[in-house]
Image (tube, rainbow, N blue to C red):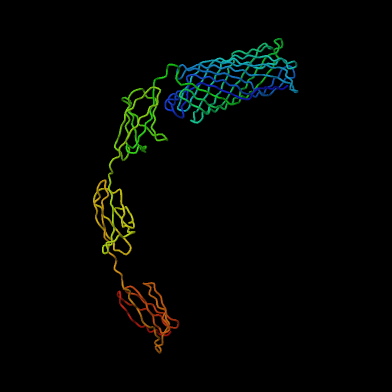
Amino acid sequence: MRRHQMGAAIVFAIALVSSGSASGQGLLVQRRAENEEAASLRLRWGASFRSGVQEDLGPGLSYSGRTENDVALDASYFFTKLIGLGVGLQREGFGLYDVESHKVLSGGLLRAQVGPAVRGMFGRFRVEGLVGYQLAELPDFGDSIDPVFTKGQRHAVLLAARGLVDLGIAAVEVRGELPIPLSVGVPQGAGGKSSGYGVGASVRVPVLRSQMVEYAAVVDGALVNDTLSWVPDANRPDDRAHSDQKMIRAGLALQIRWPVEAPGSRPKIGALWLTVVDEATGAPVPGATVELEVGAEKRNLTPMADGRYGVGGLSPGVVVARAAAAGYFPGEAQGAVVADVEGAVRVTLKKEPPKVGGLTVTVLDKEANEPVAGAAIDVRGKKATTDAKGVAEIADLDPGLAPVKVTAVGFKPGQEVASVVLGTNSPVSVGLIKEAKRAMATITGRVRSTVGGTPVAATLELPQAKLRTRADASGSFTFKVEGGTYSVNISAPGYINQSKTVTVKDGDQAIFNVDLHPK
């Protein structure tokens, strides 16, 4: 035979807990979420997938299928942060069908449990444990030749635990339970034995938050395994029957969680948002350090992603906020903490006067008294270039005397010593003298053969000036060079190469002839 279970395949879970808020009352709710819920209630309606087998004096039977009216209720209440009470109730719809999908048997199975619970919190990780009583109804079909659906009952001490990790955008939970049987009753038998276990996991994602509650979507799954053994007839103690059942429960859930504190136990606390702004512009001051004085206690605050400074869990009363930032005078402001209210404190900072000075450098042609554009300026390693008006700005200079070095194409380098004054741009003028233009020297002559004095079309080269020329048909050549000493290398095919040295001054004209000897 096989077994089907039918209904809606939707799971809903409702749990009453506290949680943090994504906006609005975030600091107050965040404070409450540190200690988790004081009470919880979960209602689930979903699907289970069951498979099982029974071995008895008859042919035995096996079954599998889906139950879609799987309903469960779990609740807990914590008297303190660590000690509480947990209860649970679950109904499993059950149906047995033949191979032609005709219903043979149907009914429902219950599980119930109750017991004290404890928990421990370690930052984002929480552990809970329960030791209590469990009643579990298990399927019993009697003789499989003529099956009749009845219920075996297992009374047990239940050991249960779960661990939960809060990842911020989601929470992951794993859990397990182990019943230790106290007694087992089977209607068709003289006595029985039973064992079992259960494991499960879920992922919870908050979808809506307020100061008092959190609504979350949950994906949940569990595996439950139970066995039941009994003696069908007390007059035949050697004949025994045995059944084994596995059940997978899965679905979606909607979860609601209530405040952390037990009723009447929540302390009166408030929260503050602090901002630090420029006194002149009202814009936030980046990189400010903030200290909050609450009575005799002082707290250093760290800015959040939006630049504000938030702090919760404050006792009602007056607080003093002090702020400091580079380039500003320190500032402070008073604020009041009101229970269950997120207040705001605004600290304004005034800019300090600049601790540096600057120079406005004007570069002029000293002879023509005209601006020099494109001049390069260097003041203590800070560089600038003059504009079309011959002006350049050099900022962020320490006060005191500073050499101003200026260079420009076509001018001799110039330098002045300027005085940098705190908080001002001091003017300084630098006059440049143009470099004198040099008159080119001329080297000219003729190349002839020592045999007959005939002209030679020789090649002449001045390596220092990187010049090269060829004598014309008459053997004449000319070079234009700056004043200096040069080597003149002369070569021609069929003649011995020669090298001569000539020295000229700017504007001079040197004439020398070269006689080449044939090879």
